[in-house]
Image (cartoon, rainbow, N blue to C red; front, side, top):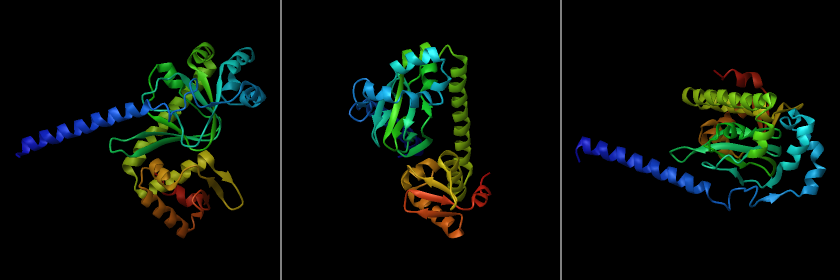
Length: 277
């Protein structure tokens, strides 16, 4: 086979692979038994139980910005669902029928690369929300949301969002501010993945986790991880073996302490920060 034919074949093969991957993603997004359907399935919290939680729901950062007279209507229209670890809240290609607020637990937002690897963009925890920008722009989800722990998720229906959120400058500002914050973080992630070595990526991961879930203790900054080692690698752009090795090196240097697979104690934050660009 001459070079031109070989090149043509390579281009065709890559296109075929990309098309197949796209079809797989779309098919995956339609698997109803794996995705939480807030109106058609999943474990919906009863109305009585939801009423018992009203005061706690009012304290969610986004909901407490709603006028009191409108909040009663919003709380009556929202759906509160239990989501088990590993269940999907939404998948690539899903239409934005709800904005989701995390009431309890943690979830990851990620995307499968063309090579089939998982790249985690964000870890969301109690009080975080996702989907507001999709509702505003009327665009389907381009990524996936999956529960890292057992969660309780508040689903705000699209009509409720447009009725009570769309016309509120304060609420719109919150949604757009969070969207801008995530865009900046994504830009930082791209720069870090393209310019950092494995040591810098691992240090950056620990600092990012410290900012999100770190708890100050006498031992140091405690990270109770919702991620396994492979997911830590996916979050930092490293293979599982590499992230495991680098964590071991940081432990030997005295920067961190490892307590099993789910707890990391940061003991020397300043040394970790020295690795960051």
